[in-house]
Image (tube, rainbow, N blue to C red; front, top):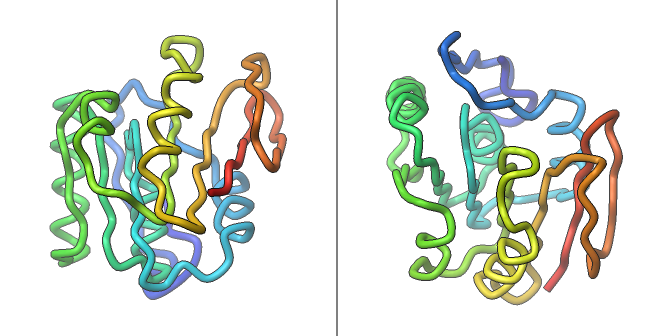
Length: 168
């Protein structure tokens, strides 16, 4: 998988073939980051980070503080390998449960979540994430087209998935 834009454009992010996560497709990532506009010097939180491709894209585009939250040990090992090749101290990995992390973390300018479809309480995830947004921040949730939520400001659909946006 390649980073689409920014200082690390076309840099390959290695993904283990044994991973069980579903990386965000490049067309979805392009739409996501195009809609965010300039993200230089903004903090970026990637929940259920999996491959970390969204975090690496945010870092490449100038985010000042990038945090990845993932619970799977194999995914964490892969994330650490990829970060070594990026040579960055501004990317932090947290091997934690997302909900526990959100109860204790600092606030962020941009929060992105891509939980496994149909497993988690998305309303709880949205509520906790919105509490951790800085003023003017945005929370983006990638979810299945079959999952329904309310209160979002914008929606973008991509085949079987969609991005929902909440602004603070």
